[in-house]
Image (tube, rainbow, N blue to C red; front, top):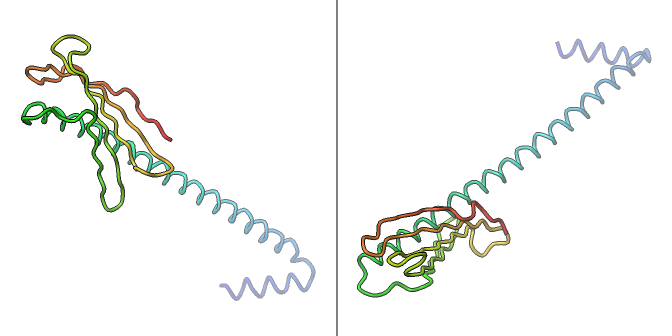
Amino acid sequence: MVKFFLKKGVKLIKNKKGYTLIFIIVILLVISLMLGLTLTLNFVSRAKVGSFDVYREEALYIAEAGVKELIWQFKFSPTQPPNPLIFDIDFENWSGRGEVSFRRDYPVQGQITINSKGYVPYNSSIQVERELEVIVDSQTYQILKWEEKSLEYIK
């Protein structure tokens, strides 16, 4: 089958009637190249968006972990927790940082306001930040309000 088309193509070129065929083949190659480049750029941009989605989730998890850690320290630690509480997370393929601060008797007497931020990846030129504000009863340590202050902040 291939030999048939090659023979036919060579015959057309010798008769000077095959220039149209060559022109069509070149046009098809150019169109294929352009489609290939477009698809490659599309996949690369989707991969970057996907990695930012992962960073967003990880930063939120770090901020939540900071809130839970501070509540645990209020409940069970015999000493006052540090203010701010800063902790680093360093896994094999990503790193993050959590910064948690609190204010006692704010907004009203008997409540503690906790502000927790998660940063992923930490010490990088591009970084996602998520921030939570949580109000806790200072006697029972029950969560009264849980609000995300910033959905994301990309530096």
